[in-house]
Image (cartoon, rainbow over all chains, first blue to last red; front, top):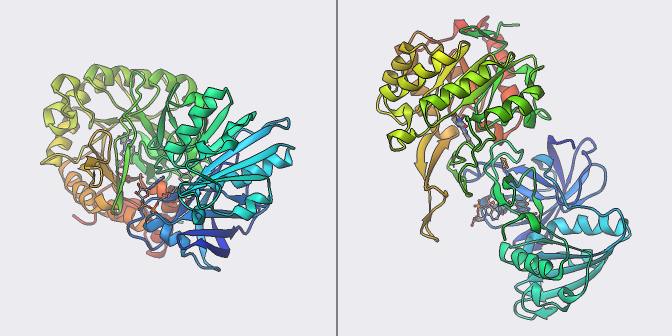
Length: 253
Length: 302
Ligand SMILES: Cc1cc2nc3c(=O)[nH]c(=O)nc-3n(C[C@H](O)[C@H](O)[C@H](O)COP(=O)(O)OP(=O)(O)OC[C@H]3O[C@@H](n4cnc5c(N)ncnc54)[C@H](O)[C@@H]3O)c2cc1C
Ligand SMILES: Cc1cc2nc3c(=O)[nH]c(=O)nc-3n(C[C@H](O)[C@H](O)[C@H](O)COP(=O)(O)O)c2cc1C
Ligand code: FES
């Protein structure tokens, strides 16, 4: 698995909401192969508050030199990322981390995402469908406006929604969706920690294998500094290199 | 081309750039970005006699122009290093230096003895900022007597180049440097991190799991530079300068303050290519300024 550091050219930016941007970035050379669940560690220029790089999931990858990032502006670093202009370059180290486990045989998969946690699930869904899997996306948000890239997900697989105010899909959290009660061979999830914990518990109860993508704070992103560790059943492990994807069996949820 | 090579006791460095312990893993993590053999050398993770799990998460807090860390020396112990890591590094044509930590002088000495048996490891760097379990957890390196005690124990056990890394959390760092020189250290490196703290005001709790942590990055650079200058005037052994170095210009300022070599630490996180770029940049600066050797500029600011 190759990793590179390079300045990607921003070729498009779409504001999905006032606080969410979809960035299309192109490298001058073909990128090393990206697997779903991997991330880029991004240098944010011109923000004194943003000293370290910011990890951002790879939302889409065209198999060649172009990736997309889905960014939620939560602080100064991500706010500036959302303001990136077409024609500007972004210093990225990528692709990093170990992504989701991909099945060798077609299976029935549930992909549960909350908020900007849907980001890595898009490329995952595309890859699972390519492998002949039956894919259901379960996407949750506070309101309908928080559901990001709904049409894009609908073009890949079945989409079920939950919103806390009931403005779209089932009212409540993702675990309240009827889709959660169906049988799957594999569950993948990414989003706020309480959501992933709830999904992990439900998966454990139904005996379904489940992988989660964690978002621990990182410094190097390369497995060198040991700042990002998560306590697992086999001791402290680096989220940036042993993860960000872990099987829920390994985690102390 | 100017001559970039420097010596530290019996160590020969191709250029004055090393990487700092804890910021460069075991080197191999950076191999996709840096030609490891283009560095003067690199210093691997803090290694202890027995495996350590380190502190709980969160271990890091970002601060203006820097970061706090309380990793707590997570490592699998010296024997794991010798059997699993060393074979991946032994054929590199550069200096691989092991950073050694401990909680008693005996632990330090035993760890050093086991590393001495590794043919291709030419030097160790002692991290004396570790808490001394017998002295109520106060760091060895904050008193001249504590620092001297560790160095004395290790000097007996370790015949190769012995670098002692000084803590900046002291009143008079030159005094500590003189004490370790008197015990036979071949070189001193400084600075380790400055003790700091951050509070999450919404949760009304410290950000770091163990409340305090070590500050690194450009935020500490002026303090580090001042200490390197003070120590270089106080001892005869070579001084290795570090603390916030991000560019070749930063590195040159440490050399002008009296450093024989420098280490690049936190800057590796900002740009994984930083160490090699700094080594190259020093050469370019020397060339454009008609400087033929590192000695020509070392300590020019006295
Ligand atoms: C593997 C990985 C993949 C990620 N993928 C994406 C993605 O695809 N899109 C996206 O928008 N974000 C993603 N994140 C989260 C993103 O890295 C953080 O939101 C970002 O670092 C915040 O930086 P900031 O400067 O904007 O905010 P800061 O000013 O640093 O912090 C603002 C707030 O965000 C919180 N925060 C900071 N860092 C993180 C973090 N790592 N995780 C969660 N909360 C954090 C802080 O606690 C604070 O409350 C990912 C994180 C990881 C580790
Ligand atoms: C994440 C991290 C881990 C570190 N681990 C060690 C260590 O194990 N042993 C040690 O002597 N110093 C350790 N240090 C200190 C650095 O080697 C260096 O002294 C310090 O960071 C100052 O240099 P810088 O500002 O260039 O990073 C660590 C620093 C960081 C940021
Ligand atoms: S962020 Fe440095 S080891 Fe994971």
